[in-house]
Image 1 (tube, one colour):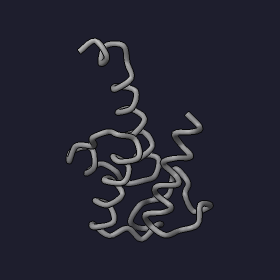
Image 2 (tube, one colour):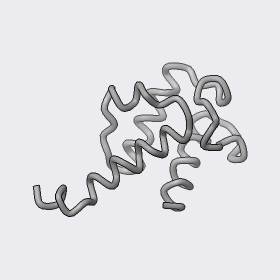
Image 3 (cartoon, one colour):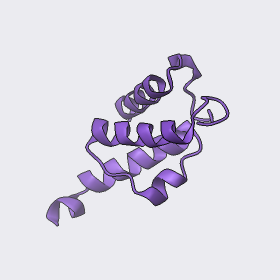
Image 4 (tube, one colour):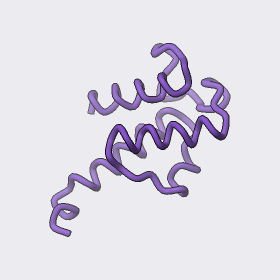
Length: 88
């Protein structure tokens, strides 16, 4: 989980061009990190590339904080690596 958190934090910090210490789970993408709507789209694309996942439009619309991003990515990665998903 720590590796996942570090990777998400790195992607977010790189995308928004901010120092890593500003990436906290409570940091709001728009208010605290200065994300524009384009930045939000680009961070989703970067996360999809980093983790080889797909984040739906509905899921991406709910991403308000870095914690939301981490929870979303964690849930998708877990779904993809669950024994049920492998059996499909």
